[in-house]
Length: 271
Ligand code: 1GP
Image 1 (cartoon, rainbow, N blue to C red):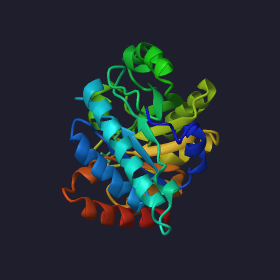
Image 2 (cartoon, protein in one colour; image 1 turned 90 degrees about the vertical axis):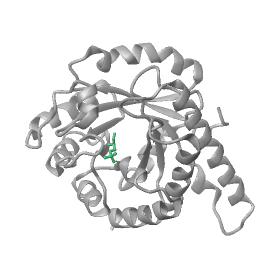
Image 3 (cartoon, rainbow, N blue to C red; image 1 turned 180 degrees about the horizontal axis):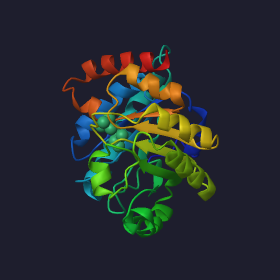
Image 4 (cartoon, rainbow, N blue to C red; image 1 turned 30 degrees about the vertical axis):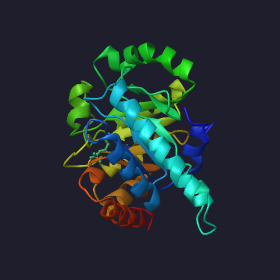
C-alpha cells in the first residue's frame, strides 16, 4: 500500500461534494497500463476520485494490478509536479477507491472502499453476504470502508441483472426517498443512484431530487449512461454531489483526446 495521502477519504468525499467527477475504471475492460493512462488524463482534466471495479469479470488479480498501476502512476505525476513550481502536487492526491462486485475483487493498495449494500437486491449475497466475506480482508489491509447504499434504478443494465435488483422506476420518487431514509438510518455516508453502465437513459432527475430531499446527511452519487456535461449538469442541479462515468473513458484510445473531452464535460457540469 502506498503511504496513504488520504487517511480520511470520507472527509475528502464530503469536502468535494457539490459538482465533482469520478472516473470509473473497469479492470475487465482495460490493461493496468491503459487504466493508469486514462486516470492521468482524467485527473489532469479535473476528476477528483477514481473508482476501480465492475459488475463482472473482476477478481483480485486484475483489480490489484490495476490499483497498483494507478497508484504508482499518480505518485510519479505527483513527484513530477513537485519538481515544477508551476504545478501543484496536491492535484495528484486523488483517492483510488474500490467499487467491487464482491469480496473476491479487492486490493490491499486501495485508499478506501465503497462498502455497499445493494439495497434493492433480492439476493442476500448483495445485501450482506459478500460484505461479511470481505470484511476481514478490509480490516487486515487497513482500507477505509465508506458505508454506501447502492440503489439500482431503471433501466439498470448489468448491475441490475447481476445484482438481481427490483429496479426503481423513473416515477417512483417516494420509493427512492424511502431508500435514502433507510440508508441514513443505517448510518451510511453515501447513497449511489445507479442507472447501469451504458444505460440509454440516466437516472431521472426527479429521483435525484427526491433522494436529496429525503436526506441532507448522505453524499449523493449518480451514474450510469451519463455521456456529456449537459446531462451531468441536470443531475447536479437536481442534487447529485458526484457524477460517475465509466464508458466515456473507454471510448477513447488516445489519452489526450480523453482529457480534452473530460475537460469540456467537467466545465459544462459545473456551469
Ligand atoms: C456504472 O454508473 C457507472 O456503475 C458508470 O456508468 O459506464 O454508463 O458511465 P457508465
